Length: 63
Ligand code: SF4
Image 1 (tube, rainbow, N blue to C red):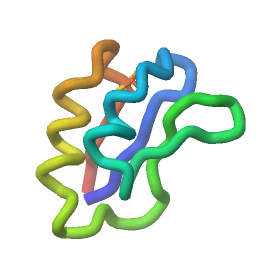
Image 2: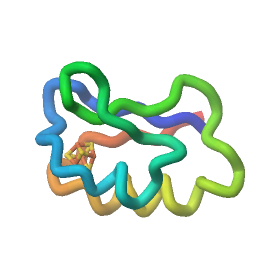
Image 3: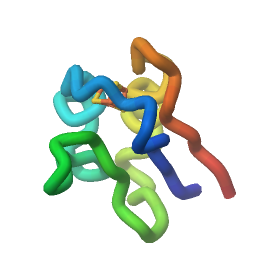
């Protein structure tokens, strides 16, 4: 499972980074971006929590 963030939609609220910092971090534009590779197994639940909690629903999890 991988994650992506719609760079045009993120409002930089920081929720995903608080919930799952192993996967999400601010980039140089101060919007959240996801790691490129697979989400570590032990972070999957929290990555889903971040996706579900994103106030503007711009996090996608995909195979
Ligand atoms: S939760 Fe959504 S809006 Fe907030 S920083 Fe993460 S991707 Fe951006």
